[in-house]
Image (cartoon, rainbow, N blue to C red; front, top):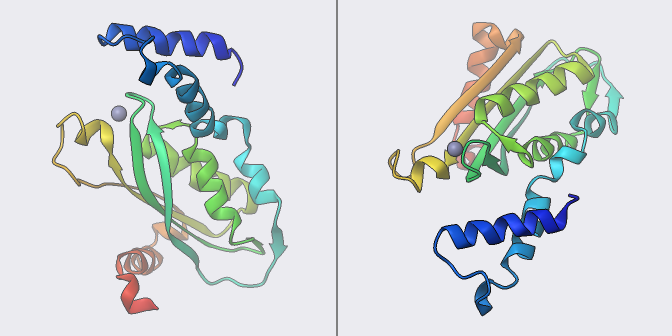
Length: 191
Ligand code: ZN
C-alpha cells in the first residue's frame, strides 16, 4: 500500500473521534500497526487468482468430482471492515484439465484478502475456476461467521451464513446431492 502517512493520519483521526488520545503511549504505534495489518489483510488486490491457478495446470482424463472442503479463510466485509471467518468448499468435474490441489486454497486466499461480501466471493471462486479450466461443472459453498452481525448484536452469536454457486453439472440433482452430502459429512466419518 502506498500513502502510508495518509493512512496513518486517518487512523489517528479515528482514534480522536472515538474519544481517544492518539498520543498516549499505548496508541502511539497503533496507526503504523493498523497500516501494516491492513496491508496484509488486503494484499489480495495485488494478486491475480487466475494466475495462481495457471501456475499448475495438468491434462487429465479424470472426469470424477474433485473436492476440497473446509478451506479456512479470514476476510473482511466491505460494509463495516469487520472480519468474516469461514470455510470454503470447492468442487469441480474436470473436462480435460485439472489444477494442482494446493492452488485452490491459495486462490481462495487471494479473494479473501480483499474487502468482500460473502455472496460475491462465492461467485468469484466459481468464475475463476470456470475461466481457467472450463470444467464440466463447478460447485462452491461458503459457510461463514460475520463479525459485523455478531459484534453489533444484529444476529445471534455463532450464526452461520451459507452461500453457494453451482455451475454446469452441479445444477443437476445427482451431482448437487453428491457434493452437498460430502460437505455435510462430519470429517470423523471420512478419515
Ligand atoms: Zn458487514
